[in-house]
Image (cartoon, rainbow, N blue to C red; front, side):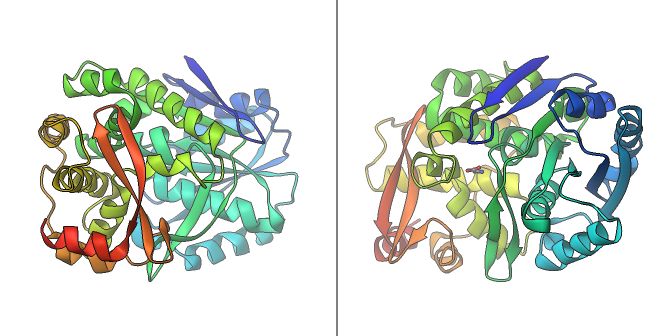
Length: 349
Ligand code: GLY
């Protein structure tokens, strides 16, 4: 089992290990969660799979458990779902000393975290990610929120969890497509800061626990320096600016992991096009690594089609946008770029 400290203003741990989900309640008590009521927020796919085990563990640890499952999918990551959760928390008389438990993938974690951030001006929550993507990225670092019609993650708050529990047996049992989506985020950490990890992924040499541990340590190092995303943390958005635009244009039929994969390729091609990257095979190596995990090796849209969908990106500041571009495998940089320039370059990709 691995314990990774996340050194934010309110520090916590990510615990990663096999079959730890059935002891979730005990891990929560050990992490200092003293609540009486524990309110599980999940979705209609995950709750039937793991809700029973988590509920039993909460009861065994002396919590009074409650559950709410909303319909799965990015299209339910919205303010209507938040309102439903907040009303149910009121009905269950959840107080500030109680705890919410996000049991599910990235959508569940973001939605439950945002509800925890604003209910009674903030209650504790615990993340139990059941997808690799949530385990290696969204459950760690305290970004919570929902989508607005104008774009992804446009309403939200920073709210760190009290604990993150990653059961590697749950992650290894994922359908191949869901597992691959998480690998897109793992590959991201390799490109932006860890060439050796990228090589291990490229060659298929990393097991699930290593993937989770290395990715979470990479994220922890960045979040420690820039909890509130004003500088270095933007590096974690490598592939996301283009990826979010791809997801949006596809009407969310392209998943987040697939969007990030295609978005990273776009960023590499962009970097090559403007002569920013120093490594000549960067796009080819990325394509090969993505192909190993059956992730898209092409973008379904042209650059000209992507540009309008980037207008509401959070990384936009005035008439500039912070593009994250790779110098080489193992190093990326934040490049503030005028929107006009982005438009011009994209029109040729
Ligand atoms: N997913 C990017 C971040 O947490 O900053």
